[in-house]
Length: 139
Image (cartoon, rainbow, N blue to C red; front, side, top):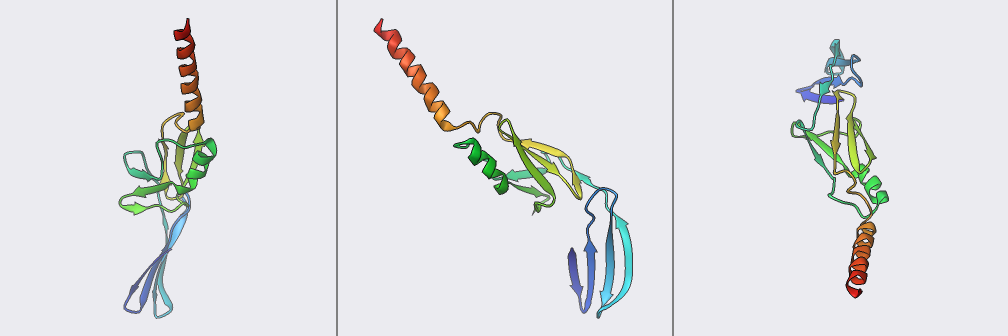
């Protein structure tokens, strides 16, 4: 809800929660409502070009760490940080998927596929490579 006070009066808007739902606009002065109207809010489609995504790293030490990082992801649109009521975050194959809700629509994928593999896997691959190289040189 947005409230603006103007010398004893209050204008409030209760925003819609989904496409086609209505919100209420009221003009209240000194506690008395003088004007009320219902408005329908159309969802604003958002794409990767419209938003800035914060809180995503290049890699994570484990799948669990990548999963836990979902709560730290933030979305900025038009210079304002959206609330977590305006989007959900899911993760699959190393990619985060942001799905916009309420007054927004659209889906954005962020991150690099497979980049949340545990770092010990990379060390193990390097170990195998070095072991193969050593045995190759002994012949």
